[in-house]
Length: 502
Image (cartoon, rainbow, N blue to C red; front, side, top):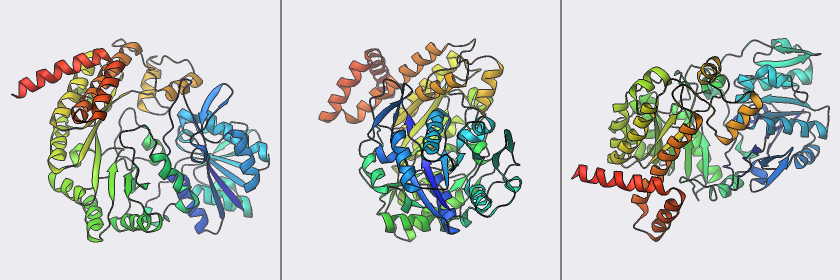
């Protein structure tokens, strides 16, 4: 049988004028690798990457990537028996329209949906007209068993993690246990991905971390034992943290350097340094084997797992940038609302150590959580100021998004805090990163104002690092036009901070 795995286009806001960030779809590449290992003919169609500069419109909705008409043409050319599509909640309609495009090519193609959205909305996804099967959770072995069953016959009931249709009846099988030994998986089938396109796209992305270097993403562990209110990772990857061995990780890095000339890595782990000894072994092996690579951890690492010894090993192995995520400047919010159980003093220590060792640091914050007060949000903004003074290069402030299945969604829906009436309106909010929670303590408009204030200050904090150059003066000019109030507030606080330090 021939299998085609599709990474769909992505929806963009109506007023969108930029370019969508293009990432290598490792989930599909892992599934492809397992299928290839078992003798199957696999093609990956990255419909976002293949036409990443283009914007189209379908049903009055704009999207980036290959047009759905072109997807139909490509599927006809590939002529697969089975098509797998990954779907995320913010771009659900793009995934479903991709399924529609596949069925237009050939209604007899089996369409299988997987990905984060499927894990939290299994029945709703399976009920869609153009979806025949769904994979819930990790898809490598569920997809393999499904392909074998469709090819050779057998019972669908025995395939764990599978959803399927029995006539008009929707059937959800028992869950598939998480893969315990990740080392048994082959490395992602990157030879099926348009790697040159990812290298080119990285040069144009509108982000401070855009790179002209050849880059790749890598995942060294799965699962998260924590239960942050806004996070959905454990809904698809489980609560048990499962690491790959350091030796296995470094072998993949060696392959990336040798086969693709990779110069920069992005570790996508949610818990890269959770086990300090394992992390140290990875970084030591990179140095011992003479691998010349730069790397960053943009998903973030827990600040309380870092110490000077580990950071020095990270630096020696090529680490240029990490993010830590205090989430809030209020310890009470971190403990009782977010549920992260992270001492904010550890964040301060980590930022200072990163500056000392020479590793760039960014910080993630969230605002607009149920139970949070305006005073708590002011503390968050103030804590961001403090961390920048301690050495953090950037602080990013996000509006809390109630993604399906998270505690944030459940609490907000239970208390009637959601400002959007149905799933379609929520998905519009996910896409636009809107404030969609209103509580007795704040309105969405107030959350917008807080975030604009925080990000306005962030823009001007970058000026201190750029003002010595012509580009820095230009940056200051543009930032002042964008948010003059934030400029005045920032300059006043900078003056106050300088006088305080003197």
